[in-house]
Length: 140
Image 1 (tube, rainbow, N blue to C red):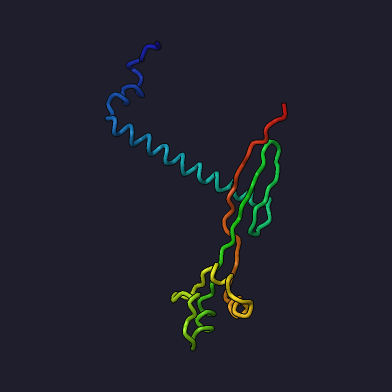
Image 2 (image 1 turned 90 degrees about the vertical axis):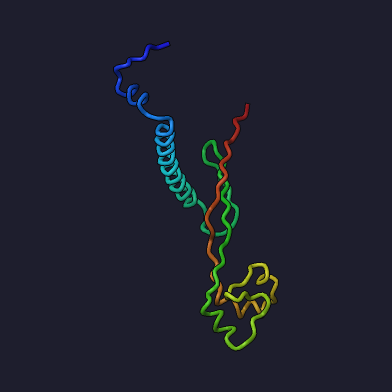
């Protein structure tokens, strides 16, 4: 066992601090580290996503020893101004919410004529990508 140098400033500082101060300092250090890690993860996800199509779906590719699977959902946004115009003089159908948005499943269940009237108010955009990284096992 190594001897403690009681003249060492770090040791003296540690002895003068309460456990709560030590816990608080360690928590603060870990929170900073977590923030940095989240930022790095975000950058890496953005770089990986750039390799795949910017459209909804599941995409798989192999890079060296890894298989990367990216899943991207689709986000729907309704133009409330256009919906207000469409339903200004008629009662709202059951599939249109009072805040003038339309449930995706309800919209998909409509006939093509009803969908055609609503499509100008719909914006579909790709959602955030989700990744699964799998290490490829070497054949033995």
